[in-house]
Image (cartoon, rainbow, N blue to C red; front, side, top):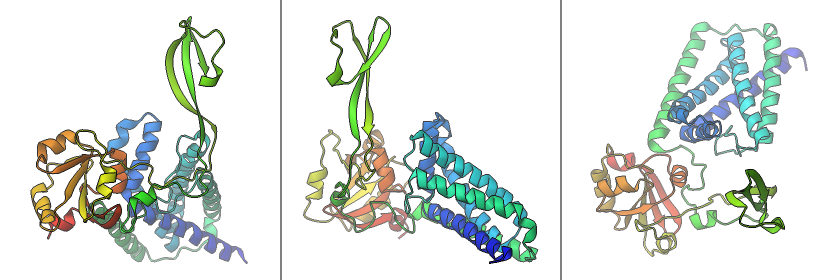
Length: 358
């Protein structure tokens, strides 16, 4: 294999990987937005959380367009410099996730292809080396691609990717890679998979005595322990890591306004019913039209939200159930999202636009 062939193969591998990575995340830009919020929360920069969706939108667009630009070699050298900047940034993120242990997954390929921090970091190191090699040898690659055609391809690609992300933000992802996809049984998704080994955890308590902190576990109290030890805090300490295999759905609880868990009773409902997920009750949503359309087809309809006060003030006549906001974000990327349920099985899953635009 000569140098030209090797560089061509390397260029196509790098370009296609960036396009693939960007397309997977562009399928669900809100998922990347939530991952960015996780990083910002860990870094104490939660004030940037309001901007993560815009950042995710632009990041996905940039990944795909630079990947396409690399394939068509237009503009070649500038694209390589841009890719170098991107991969340095990604390597920092995956390296932080790996060495800090504070981020479980980096979100490199969204929720459709979840990689461990170690594999993600190795992938980015290999990409970094590849891009550096392409940049060093860029003069060996002929770039006689038509300027006007190159601009046209990149412009059409930008419009297509931009509109595609706008569409999924209104109508749910094209491909649902989350555990709440159509056909899944929520009860089954909450079962611990075979071979799963949980983390071994002990409770470590912190006491203060004469201004000095003392930490110990419940089975190792000091022999002189008495009332002079003043309790301060307690925390969970992982003494042995498990294998990371967990149930796809960690927790799914639906509570009445009075705080009673009604999940099991709801799953035992003998007839189909509707769950309308909305983390916050947005007053600009045409709720009256939406609910009228749904009530025309289904008798049992429940609003699932984390916004108790908003639901009571705006939807007092409806059946309201309270749930965790993180669970709602995972189950429903668009608010409101309508689930047609049969017991614990998701039969249909539609954005509210599917009903209000009829």
